[in-house]
Length: 473
Ligand code: GDP
Image 1: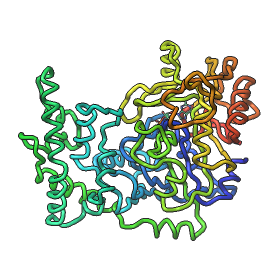
Image 2 (image 1 turned 90 degrees about the vertical axis):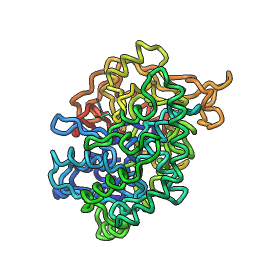
Image 3 (image 1 turned 180 degrees about the vertical axis):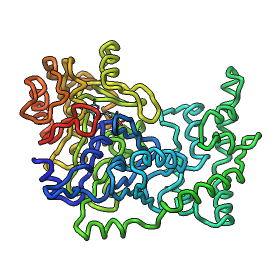
Image 4 (image 1 turned 135 degrees about the vertical axis):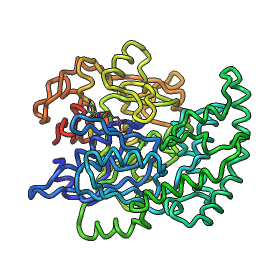
C-alpha cells in the first residue's frame, strides 16, 4: 500500500502499538501528522489522544531536542493542528502543565482541548499506587503515577473529572471530603505497614511520599498531615489553582467537535498508547495496563470507529516491568548491547527495558486483536537502524511444557519460551536511507520475513530518531 494514498483514502487513521508498548509510536504520529497531500494541505487537521495517562511516555526528537509526551498528543509540535485529549485519559494536571510548557517552546500557541469528562489523578491515587507497589505482596511494576487507582475510582462512579477542577469551592470540598472517606483507611494502613517494614531506612512512610514531586515545589507529603491523614485544604488549594490556570483548555464534551471535524471532511489522527499485549482484557494479565489498548478498545475510548490502523512494532522486542516475555534475550552481554544500541530505558521512569527478539506469535496475536482473521495488516517497523551490526532472530513459535505451539494463549503464556526461529545475517547500516529499494540485502530479507511470517504489509520503516528518518512505501 502506498502510505500517503492509503491515508488519503481514510478519515480516521490510528497509530497502534502491537507489542508491549514503547514501539516508537510518538515519532510515527509526529511524522504522519506532518504529511501533506499533493496540494500542500496537511493530511490531518486534528490529532486525538483518547486514552492513556502519565504512565505512558512518547518520545519525539524535534530540532535535535528530546520532547516526551504523556497526555498531550505526540504530534502537538506540528503547527496548526487541533490537539484533543479525550475523556479516557487519566489526567494529571501537574504532568499536563509541565508538558504544555515544553510544547510551547516549539509551538507557542498550541490548540489543545481537554475533554471535560477526563478523570483526574488525585494525590491519594498516586499514594496508593506507590504504597501498594512497595508493601503489597503483588507488585506488578506499575509506574506509580496513580493511573490504576484513578481508573478504579472511575469504575466506582465516584471519580473527579477535569470540569470538577472548575467547580465552586463548596462543591469541590464536598467531593474531596467524600473521596477522602474512601481512600484514607487504605492509605493509613499502607503507611503503617511501610513504616514497619522500612525501619531500616529510618525515614518512614511520610518521608517516602516527600520524594514524589508534585510540581510548584510541592511533594506528595504536602497533601498529608503528620498522622498520615489527607489534608483536605491542601488538596482544595492545589486543584483550584490548577483549575484556574487550565480553564482555557478544559472544555465540555468534545465528541460534537470531533463529529463536525469529520462531517466537514477533515482527517483525524488517533494516537494509541501502551501496546496490544498490555491490554487489560487480552494482554498478559495481571502484568497489563489499566485500560483498553487494542484497536477495538481504542475505538471504544475514542467514541469513533477507526478506518485505517497503522500497527507499530519495533524491529526487535522490549518489555518494561514484570510479566511473560517468551523471546527475551537471556544472554546478558547481548541484551546489554541491544539495550544500549536502542536506548531502551523507559521514557517515564528511566527503568532499563528488558530486550528480546521479534516474536511473531505475539505480533500475530496483536494483529488478530486489532484486525480480526482477515483484516488488512498494515505495519510500521521502527528502529531497524538499531539492529545494524546484530544478527537478529525472528521467533515463529513457542515451547510450552516441551511442545511447540504458534498460538498465543493466555493460559500458557507465562510458561512459554522461544521455540523455532529464523536467524539472519548481520543487518547493515540503514541510516539515511529513504526508499524500500535501497534496503541492503540482509535488512531487506529481515523485512520480507516479517511480512511473510506475520502476513503483514510493511509500509514504513524507521531508520533513526528524527521525524524524517523513515523509509515509506
Ligand atoms: P512510544 O511510547 O511508542 O512513542 O515509544 P518511546 O517514546 O517509549 O520509545 C521510542 C524511542 O525510540 C524514542 O526515543 C524514539 O525517539 C526512538 N525511535 C523511534 N523510532 C526510531 C527509529 O526508527 N530509530 C531509532 N534509532 N530510534 C527511534
